[in-house]
Length: 238
Image (cartoon, rainbow, N blue to C red; front, side):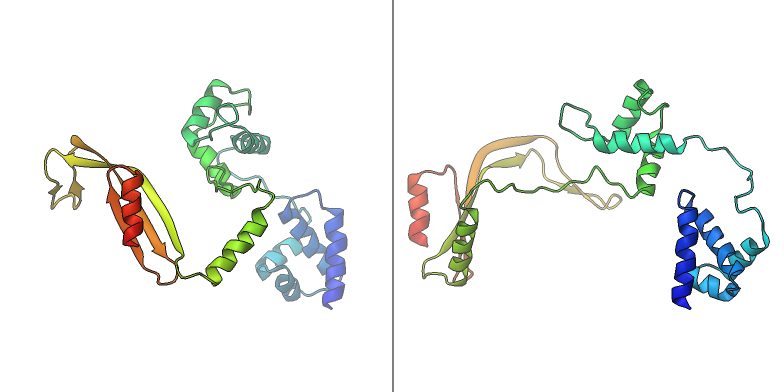
């Protein structure tokens, strides 16, 4: 039975493949009913309500009736032009990304791009309706070293079989030491910490960190400037 239904659905869908999905569903309902398939079976196969099946069984015209309400302002071609503009162009020469406000202002000055000015709220709705998030991005690293994978295997093996004195090192240079002109305040109404805007610069410091792979112990040192002597002192401590 299921195989027969699937063959009927495939032949019907092929005949109306250029129409909307709802029109296709209605043609399928009509076609299945004409092939003596019960209404409950049709509703179960198409995952729709039986009332929907009965409605389109009795109707000769499968198109939607005219409805009241405001007519469509932005056509489908404008939607597609907006998506192409927002996702495939950049505001500056090969860099940057569009924001809703920036795109609204730009399209307002260059209305010929999509055919009409368009507000940022509508831009947001069109992108959201198509599940598009062009403002989001993630970094990736292009491998240009021909010896990358042999080196990777060597490091992995080193972590699995660490020697006695294997340490990982990292540094964070140029941390500003700032002193506020007045102490912080805590308000009951706002429930947040208030910081003084003005501050005094007390120079910069560098933080050195060493991690022992064998023991899991982390050691750190704070120095004013990374030079040879502070570096050697840190190594002696280790």
